[in-house]
Length: 282
Length: 294
Image 1: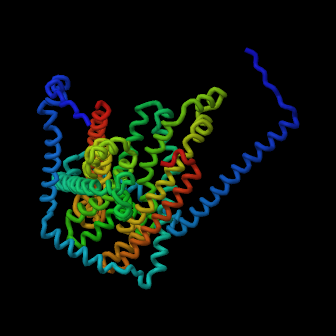
Image 2: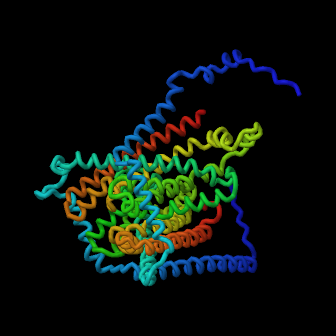
């Protein structure tokens, strides 16, 4: 086996100055950024009250809690929990549907190819952004003030916060639609509404249906937590059992949530597949 | 230009028309059946969720007037007529907002580090053996399916009230969510560089460091920034269960009907979420811009 010729390092240096003699600013940028990030991290740990002692005693507590959770056991409240789970699923389904129904017309207003005027579009977009900036739990608290405790407040909370998200997503789907079909409708004498109905909607409906299904799925998760502030569903039971330290019931409820979410995932995956075909299932 | 439309004989046309109508009718039937099932589900759901349209119509006025009330000061003026009075607590609220952002920063960063350490074990193409892949994947699934606020509720009991529980809850949730995104990214890489590095006799860690990491680092950074954005929203409600941040102030203001405070805190939350969205968007643009140039 022949030996490789030794590399001509001086020649290489001369030919690739950018590799061998990078300026100090380029070489130091990454370490400095890392150092800065770590500095903020360390400051955060101190400021937020982290200490090894607290960590240890907390982990000890946590280990003890985990031991108490085994085995999961609903006690005598299984029917109650099943009803609560049904409530949660209802909240997710109704909230998402309401949001989609209201968001569709608004999203038309926020789409560039429907409303070309920036002046009109801008307030609609900012309005949707502000709604999205507020968490579902906050909306739940607000609706509890309005319609009282219970799952209905949860439905409305999910509807409002998804309205913002759907408005944005739908308008993006509409902007991504092919303009040629709309032009075709216009060429055959259709008016603006005809253009939307026959040119746009057939293109965007499958996309929108996919997104709605995806949101029903993710709202099943959201619906489990809005119960924590009193808006019904399984979250209410979960928060109560955590507060009274009934750990076996807690772990049972968490398992129920996991199973329900997995089931909804599976169903909506199948449905999405059926509606928009393999191509668009991301 | 002349146009010639050739008409088919009637018999053939009738057959084609019939086939067309049949196809359309079948499609319509399927759509109608789907719609019927969907509406049945809606009805069942509205019974389950105790929907009462009368309540909604009676109280919808309350919802609108709620916004009227939160935009009115104690002395009856609109909030924007006296900004100083409206944002009277801005020092305190900015402090808690800063704490919220710090919670999500620390939580996201530690979650990202853990997810980074775990995802190479979980990705199909880089996992050293099947059993760690299975264990890590199930663990990450568990972390992201249980909502972060449920973890916060439990951690508040284990670690005591305060931001520490919030940070840990966000960390756990980020491990699950980021781990999955990282893993999917690693599964989509080009395997040739990995083979190249392995053929030089490098061990597993060197393969990850010199063949996998350069391909995915920009994407990892982008996902992490996105997660940070999401976590700021999540951290703003951690205070509802006593896990630190601005949520504590907000829940007190809502429950005690300090109307103008509610709108002031909401305004500050929305503004800081906007600023962070724009900031991370800018950083992401820079990262990907640099990536494209290289």
